[in-house]
Image (tube, rainbow, N blue to C red; front, side, top):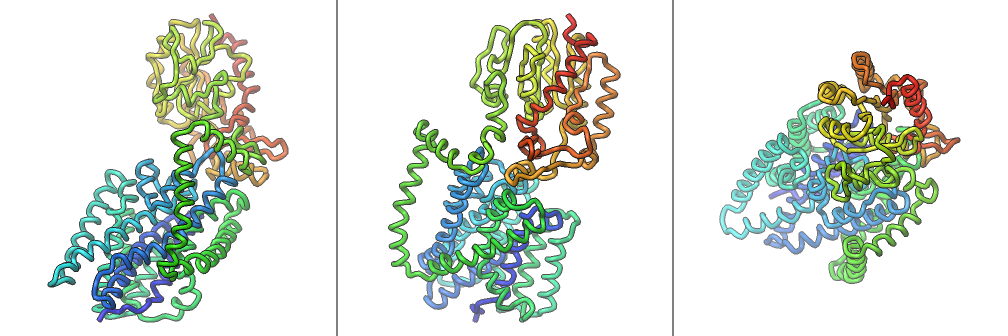
Length: 625
């Protein structure tokens, strides 16, 4: 007879797994493997779901699909919809207004977040700290497993003989197939391997196989405790391990702990079991809480983490008792009444938003304007006129990211085959030909507002491309061409050096040598929101990015060629050891993210750049025709 008892040690492990995930999302280095808590949770889900299916089977003598799905619906959906809805509304009011959470919210509500991040090629490890709903990818995987797994068992149990043998055979085959393709896809497309649910099913199925054989395994606390200790050690250890093998080992150790555990008052007590009970609510709440508190409350890790943990606990207790438990044990007839009331409202709102977003431009603009005017960051800090990069980088009033990118189709060309929206021209004397990606585009406000420059042309390139042929063609039209780009690393410098001799000999070069970079991607936004002076350490940044060698190589290149000049943008922004990120007294924001200047920060360089150009002009280095 199988053991259908409530297993409190699984609740302990469930609580431990969400703590690991929480700590990972704090972005503290020591917990950078905490994401493996999700894999532990997948094993637990596979075990528990299999137990529930067969517990009902032995009571009802059948695989009750309707009963299973209704219980899963009541367990997952009400709490999910409530917390996701609260997060979305909070984001509309207090989140960065230049970013939208609409698509992420819909994906989370419909259980397809993992597929959304695949389609948008959004890697979990790059995306997780910017999106308060990014953690819902795992719920998408879990919900998709719940749809398929019971149906598989139901079909197998339609056969009369050897049901257990057939089920375990199918599960073992599925386990190895899922694991094989997970391993294979990691080498070719890690995003697919990470997010695509069938490639993560091996973890759930491993849990299911463990339950089917749980009663056959002799319990041993020494083995159980050893596996738990090794699991914790591997997750907290700072050494880098191969992702696949570490993932596999963590899954195996989780299973060993589950099936060999006997008893322990240290691990299994009222507190640990209760935390395991509220772990679903905790998981849903923790990332939105971290996201908003990190922006609004503290820049100090200890205070930030501690406060976020206790706020998450408080919210989890509230939703666990008032929503999770209330709907979980509600009779389906009563739940249906809630459903009939809420569903039409939801569908009306959903249809309205879809209509506004895709079919009515005026309504969409009105809604966007309403939301923008209601947003705290806009009202308090004029966010939309200070932070968005694509909307604020302009040349003669035209948005360069709308007209000047490689994929843009919204432009016209003049007789010289130049995009007129990317060109400011007053004569045919000196043209500043600016080329590169966002790291040179961030300096466009300098050129656009400088009184010493008449003619500017900007060409956007995503990589480290250098348009030698186009520059040479333009050189035939103007008296003088000055080619300008940003050099932020040795790779870009080497490309510029190798391309230099291919340019017409009279074309001149001005190279910007990057800017200081921030440690925290959200540091500038947090400093603005929290109204605190912020800076970064120049020496630390130069060492971390190996800039000393880059600067020396750039200087060597300049000394070898009389037509090469360097505007020291790095030193111009940071003449002292401490580089200003946000100046509270002047309300001056230098950065929009960790590596790009805000428009107002870029404009602070105009006087120094004009001095630089003036000196070259006085020395007859440029404007010499």
